[in-house]
Image (tube, rainbow, N blue to C red; front, side, top):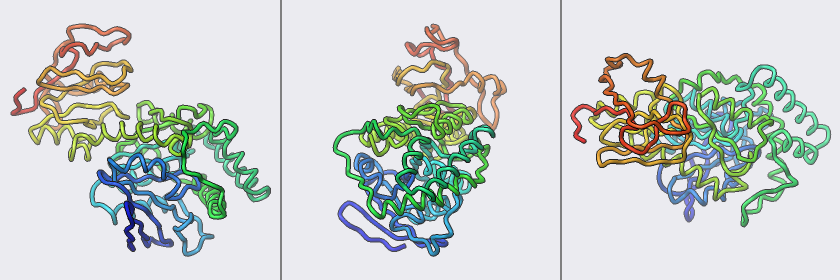
Length: 410
């Protein structure tokens, strides 16, 4: 790994099988890797990174075949598994702790492979509109794979100008309505960017079509996967369908980010704020939050502390945590209220959008507990909330089922 340090940024070259990767590191704080969409290289996310570097150590890179990440033989192309292995090797050279990852479009699909093939390396993956046809029913999957093949044929026959229009239509991007924040860094269509588009269309499209991802394995990975979609992306287009299919599979709702498919580049300030809200909630619990998977509740109780659930992309059977508190609190509210904080001096609970449904967990859990856990000490809510079929309001401590972790005082 060759490293060069400049003011505020470290750049490097990493040798991987069949290629040399270029990467950039900026900022300070928990490590956040951004895997960019389309033809985007390390510089494509520069405006977004500017809004994140005060809180995160942000890693961006050129995927193999793009810009400064050269391949031994460019004609070889790349598979999704190879792209994921590249990220695995890059992160392994930078940190020995679980990293955060923002995967946009193709970057989200790369993140899926990383989560399955290299468990524990990514603590949380924000998967923004993944281009993963295997998430869809068989007929839709076949239709969209043929769409991508047709785009490749048009590119070979008519060139890039005709192809870009088709890509925009497939991804729900409206070039005639360039909704974007002011003051963005210009991204002109340079000769290098044209070459990047060529590699993306010829080789990365082929990688998406031929992907062998076991999507069912995403429901049982150590990585906390948060589905995300652009607010303005049409619900009928391929990438948005994939985001909602992922959310359905994980039994949660997708988080809606500013802008459309490319909101990370068109609305970097607002996008960074939305991203920070999610990542802060995930990271706030410290080391146990970094391991926030199915057994983090056991870890917390065993350590003599308790934790509060948060509802950032939860799926049933998992216990991601937001922060350490004296009591472990179980949400029974089933509404979709905005963030709410309740505290009575002994515990503190935070709800974030749609809460996790603990009713089913309670029904499944034996009365005496399981996996060495103590039985629940339940308390009926004193007052029913309105607007939710079985939810309780958050106006008093009776609105939570709680039990005390062993050896703790309120």
